[in-house]
Image (cartoon, rainbow, N blue to C red; front, top):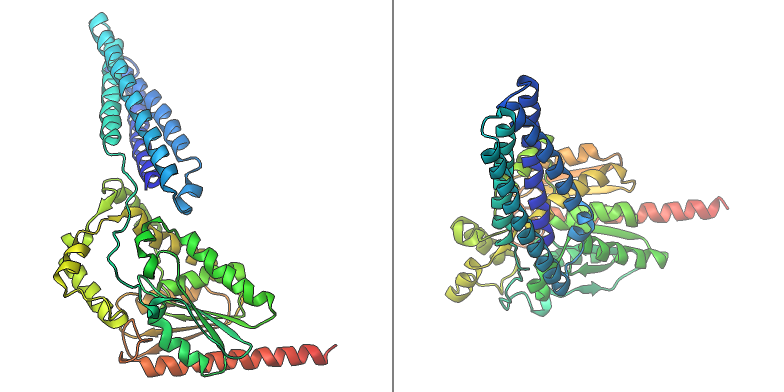
Length: 428
């Protein structure tokens, strides 16, 4: 979380630098002498220096933001950042003293009066900026152990079958339990099916906040490559967030086919990204969504009832514990990271793709999925089934149709694969 904080801090300083430079240029152009010219020069110079410092602060952050943080390293880096900010605050006091000295020393020189005032404004802002951020340097947040999702049904499983292999990826915050019926349907076609448990989910839930999209992708791609190295047909199938991850993982690992159920992504425009970037500058590093938004807790209760029957949010103790859960913005940011990577990977796919989705899906809107399909340059089957988001769960509307369409697709993939192998053999 400290690296995300450093990123936001640098973006805030960069925003101030841009405003200072713009103000400085305007004052310098429209006031060729006097107080405002001196003030403008200070805005321009300080803004340029602040901009360089902000850009240096962003250097090397991407790798740290995409890797799983280690607590001892994070604590050390947090202490270092805090120390730097306090040292800067002490220097800011010197800047303020220098600006005040100029004002008092040259009371009749308008240009120097503007210079002194400019130093006071810039130094004053930096003092407030450094003190504000020094006292708010965050500690790494861990998700409390709620004692949930630890049963056998939430663990990885394999349904042994024939030579073709389907690797299934669950959604957020799900486990292999939610894809079991889907796995069994594919298994009935003679496939071997393996359902993965992503890091930070299920029994590993307390470590969720330390996970990043790249960690999930590494596990998926490694699994695909293991089976491909055995010379087997590999189909990658993902639900919701698992669908988005499957698209990105497929670009690197190149499975033979993709089966996606309501693949998650957010088709952000340049304007929504810009707005999100501005809003993010004013948000705290940690929020408490289940306390501030009771409707979200009720939605979570419904999701748990569907996909994790062992999670009882009617239990007052568990309900209170969930309401007190802090959620770091860096964890929520993973959804935007995934969406950007999905946008990048979708046009690069070369394998057959089948996408299934409920007509009334409130989580991944069909309009978003249709935009995703437009990005793809590979053959795509798209089927809308009557239902909402969890059409892979027995008892949900659209379940039977989802299972039938899934079986039809994997059957076709296997037949085409066998045909290609036969044709290749005969041509030799």
